[in-house]
Length: 273
Image (cartoon, rainbow, N blue to C red):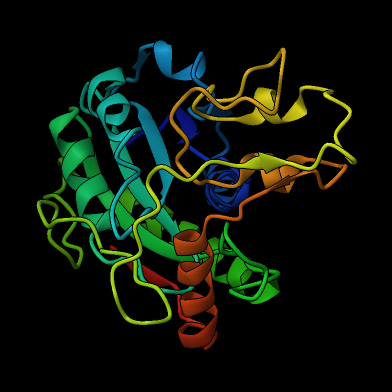
């Protein structure tokens, strides 16, 4: 099948997913000798747009795993704003060294419903948003090689296609419930209402945290105020150069501690063609 353009579209609050799909997309565009176009789906204004593709495009769609599935507050945008129009696609999810559970199955199902034809799928490890102790430094050099090998395999598969492929088969259940976070005591950790706090001795009210928040939850005129929905992506914490943002919700910190105790063993990437 003839591909005239490679596109990457991603929700990536802290940059890991963008980096992952970028490596795959760059490798594919080079292999096919076609242009590469990037579409961020991260900021609120970016998710207000409609994204329409065509049957000569190959589209890499990337999303992080949140509690074993796609981020629930972003899912409606993936379902309503992307229009495949028979474009071939690869579904890519990232996960912070615990498990991707059902996120890849869900993303594949969403893309097929949006008019894409999934030709590949993959789940790749990246540094956990909550802590540097899980998958720090990943994707590393070996991960990058695996991503490039995945791209090469996609290229070979598509080059040999003579018709629309059947939907890619991946593990998981797209309709399964979200994973229930637990604390160090093994009990459910309820931190849905947790929001970032601000160290006033460090904060200069520069507004960077408000600009990077994918939910637009932080008041740009008073960054100590978080009136909107927080999805705990840690973008504000990770991107604050003054280290002024932090979480102190007890249930959230207990969940992070549980992850650090149980999921430090490096997980493997998985790819499906």
